[in-house]
Length: 99
Image (cartoon, rainbow, N blue to C red; front, side):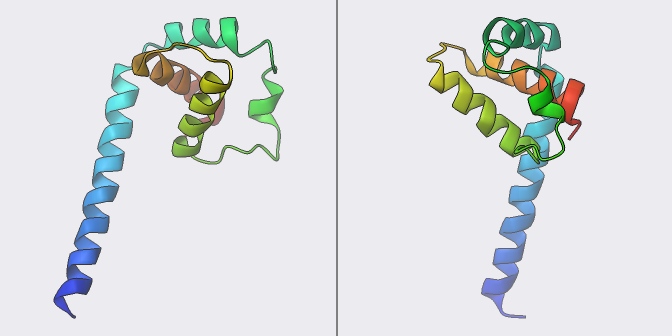
């Protein structure tokens, strides 16, 4: 197998491991209660929980969930810190998505 192909495979493996590490780290550090409070205060004005439980929901991965929470945060011009975004992501993941 050519050296470049092996390097490409190794880089993909490293990227995958890094992604898993970041997701586990995010989960361990998240404050679920804070995420629930932030969600209730800021998200339920636009939609209820059916958006998370409907059969044809847009979010199909933890990465996509993160992008969606950040999109909503930016759309509402919320001044959340990254930790608060992670709290909401983890609250939604544990209560609705379970990725």
